Length: 491
Image 1 (cartoon, rainbow, N blue to C red):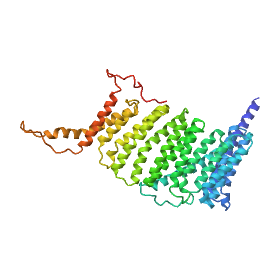
Image 2: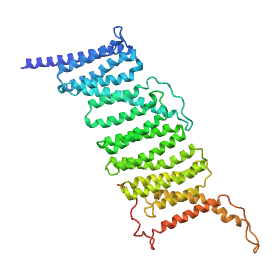
Image 3: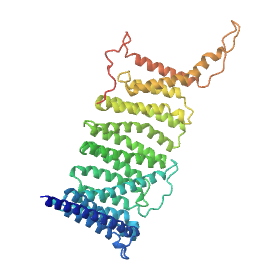
Image 4: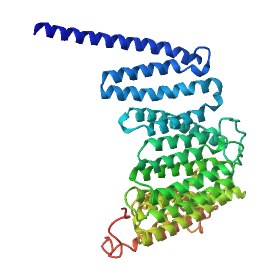
């Protein structure tokens, strides 16, 4: 018995030493195989640059088959697929470096198709390796698409000065193709439930790279982003499944619309047209997704809010494109607040589930318009702007008692209006009595105070707003039965 145990111990020790020796040999072979891969040649030919490393991977797979461990086999098979991809791409990088982007995607697609055709008994190792290759190709395409999108935005900065000449990118046409091929490779390896998400993200990145395809007309770049983004948003609230698919499609669509608005800064007329198109897009997405639950309902509300925020901006940009003075732009934006007010009242009546989103958008948009004279060189009365927005907020209700975000905007702008009107009011009331005069010397006289008329109108508007808000109070100072006790409804 002792002799048998000693023999088994010796045999086990021999196996351990053999495996250690084999592992050391593979490490040395891998280090040697990296040299021709880095140089780009093996046996004097670029086509064989990756063959030594591929042989090392095959040797590792053979050792895994001999060992009989399922985990070892899966890891070795998973490592073989990326090594094969590197062996196929290294000659392309050496001989045709200008085609490396599309070649990477083609290799990923070919490996994905080959792995998908393997029988199930092979295991999950090759599929994991093919996923690594396809994911890497998709990341390369996505990064290049983002780079082209950033270049497109950089060409229109500073805004309103047209489009600067862009760099000539002979590889730009490969990016949309590579994104599409990588998406197909991922779809071949992932379950069917992930296909809509892959398609939505791939369409977004491919559209983002349109500006690098070639000398396309510049208006086509923001137009493509706006149209495709609107389609993705509608897809998100109608057909996308499950919730993370809805979120992915919505984020991709919103990113494209935002990129289109940035690219549209080349000309005021183009930006005004894009902002004007955002309004019906937001209303359409809200109409289709308002009755859905979960993420779809949130996408519908966010789209409605974006559409309402675009109204004053579109009007101001349109007047700027027409050459109107800055004060007319500010006044037109102030008048345009009436449309979000009407939409808010309509939403409260017919789409009550989206009232919270509409009220927040109205509050933010109206506050920006009211404070515009502080940052725009228009020499407009801030007090009157703030007072008019306070009145519109009171009219927005519900009833005559704003709640939630509109209430915060109303109180803040009330303070702004009073502070802006206070200096003029003090001068009007004190200036005629600035000097002590003898009694019975007649009525005091004084020069006209600059800005007295706008400040006086602002105070009258605030008085009207206070009177309307006071109608909702009962005789004891409490809330009347006609006014809802709660604030803005949100789902």
